[in-house]
Length: 115
Figure 1 (spheres, rainbow, N blue to C red):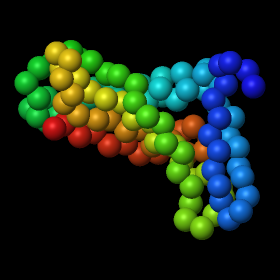
Figure 2 (cartoon, rainbow, N blue to C red; figure 1 turned 180 degrees about the horizontal axis):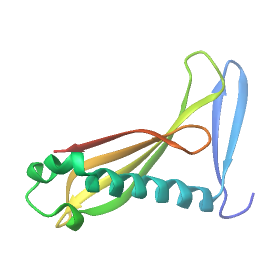
Figure 3 (cartoon, helix red, strand yellow; figure 1 turned 90 degrees about the vertical axis):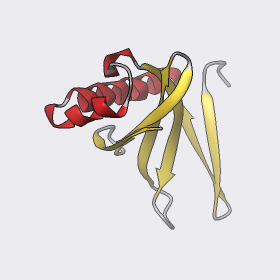
């Protein structure tokens, strides 16, 4: 097994599915999530977001979080991927942004929550 290769194995109905993910693929997923986050906070209709935090939105530290592969109920096909970004201010966690991508990698939905 190559050193930089990650494996995720899922036991589904007595069969094993192995998904091979290379680090460059993670980089691409995180890049798309960061682009989605920037588009979200800079969209004119989302000006109210600034009222929810005490510092400028552009000053929030965005950190890579987990990547989830979501399967359709009762099926073996991948339904979507969820790319999580943690939001921090002065080292303190303050919220999450989740980019929801379809199987072709297109942004189809998103969640932004400040705590």
